[in-house]
Image (tube, rainbow, N blue to C red):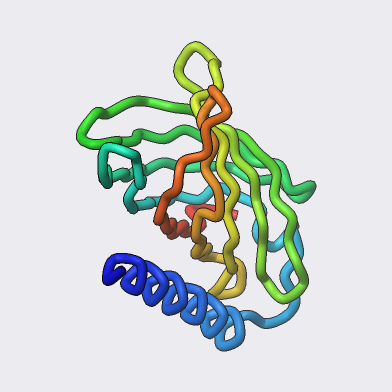
Length: 157
């Protein structure tokens, strides 16, 4: 019970923080052309597996275009197991700088390892992205509960 209360508190605090950032820092003029470019990112969190929580982290870069498409490369660590991966996906951007994006993560042979959906907000005039994972599905179709956040910063326009 105490664990569930902690989770609810964490998610509520995180969502309220994202809403506050969107209100405080967005200029209301976000367009795909403004946020397009190459960004570096990091993400950390925990996968909630039947065997217990497993730490998860990743770092990489992606390039997005004005049509909302993106692709990139990353290094990830799941419970200490490190791998090199590629990513691709699409994003929907709202004029208030909030975004929803879907990403497929592939191994070096091009096989899909997992897909994820994220909710985020661009801040600092589109130069930074803060996001939280809303769903994670493995290649076998299994949905995995996860508590994951990501921060990205534009490297160049």
